[in-house]
Image (tube, rainbow, N blue to C red; front, side, top):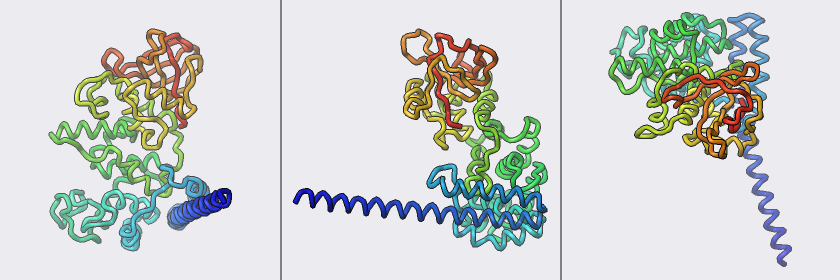
Length: 380
């Protein structure tokens, strides 16, 4: 009798697991179909606007995007769908995009609207304070006509795309510059160009600078670019930055004290902030959100996390740029300090570290030094 009961329970569990698997598969397939439809729309736009070379590129990207959608499931690297409210505005978006000569960017405009308002409210493009609004008060939500908002927003986006030098819907590096400019205003674009273009780090730096200058608590959205690109069919295409992103962010902070980093982490007063600095750099690069690097304030917690992922290497390892380096100054098994590997040259590992002399500083060590406890090796 007990065997029969166990068999029934096992059968029920199998049925339940099958039901869950079917639902998960159906969800993934539905998501993939939606994303591929968005990519196909962009393909058709590319055919009319960019010629056959652009179309060939787009076909490659569609295949890549389809693979991501089918294999990504609920992973953060997949593209999120825009809302039904945004989709309802597509005819108007397409009308004005074609009118102003950027018909191939309809999907990007939809992604911007999704981030700005989700398609809700009377100013869905949130451009009341922009230069193209000449009809309504230049104040938040001053525009009370959604069609006029779309018209102004499309013109604003066109201006940003042109000034950023965007060549096509796949020119992600320049699109990022244009997007952050749409959020921050005209001042950011030229400022960023003078510093080599858009980076998460200089977007944060510009925001802090403007907030201080204006006497405000904050200025714009430091994460505006990744926020928009999560809705853009081509926004998840690898751009080749990889492990260099966190290095670029860290390098931009050289010489600064620790207040920014320990406050960002949530501490009300000064703490030993080397791990807060590494975590802040990872967050600015999008690596915490994507699960590549953890948020940690204790060096030992960082080591434990990398060990749990099978991504920790001992001190004899030869690291690469972007690896997280942990130190044991007393050679007693206690992890005392952490930094970011900037480069490796010959037998020397060059680092960028927070809380090194109470500032962000560059340091160098011999590979295999007894002071090096080991390395976290992120899966970039």
